[in-house]
Image 1 (cartoon, helix red, strand yellow):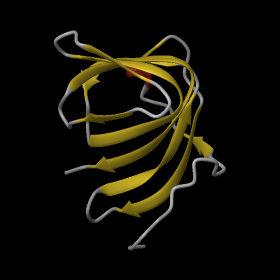
Image 2: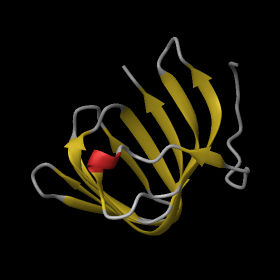
Image 3: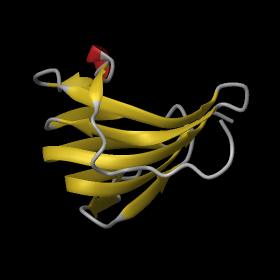
Image 4: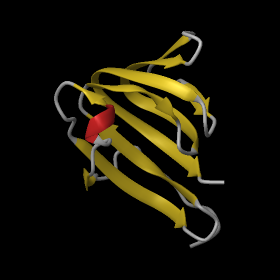
Length: 117
């Protein structure tokens, strides 16, 4: 699919795999996803993702990712200890290879755009 694709913040989300267990502190989160667009040949995808609270331990980010927060709060701490807090209406970009830790307080929902490149 190409062209203009609307991403509905209220779309029904389907269960999706949680982050790998070796990167999660505490209980495994419950995650949900709607993929609005995907071009596997280009390594690009976009949609809506939601999760229950969790902490994803520090690791190198595997993709380029732009996130627009719809609901919830999160703290992203990069490799040098700089913390960025985001909430509804905030956007954040994390570059591939950026070491970061993610702490999600409460349920979180975001629109995402990911490039593998």
